[in-house]
Length: 161
Image 1 (cartoon, rainbow, N blue to C red):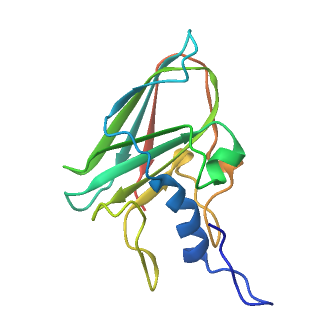
Image 2 (image 1 turned 90 degrees about the vertical axis):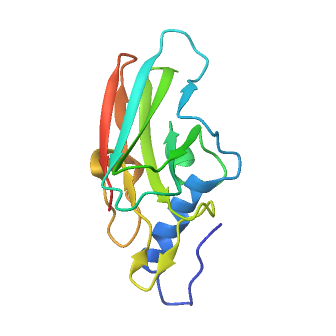
């Protein structure tokens, strides 16, 4: 889904953010909180904790991408997981994840409609990115959210916005 705008204008920050975060909500989402990684041997465990959820209910959707294209795409996501939102924090563990460069995006789908809901002032549901990266007038760039995973155990923390 591409955002469109009138000639001479740019898409609003909330529109651009909604487009990127909607990529988290593809319909082929796993219903588990742990997953096998890329299938390559020698990988380790990546734990992702998302904190700052203000209301229980719904699900938290995590998406891990290994390239700019996957990070920005609505159709290509390397590893997508969803877990119940039953507290102020949600956590997933990606087992046997191959070493490489990754970026994470996550959002609290409070009403379980598989998309981030938008209001007049931007997203109505909590969201975040690895490195707690934030974009200006839209989602962050892959380079701002990416991190190196060396194949050993790693925990990253993402604060809800």
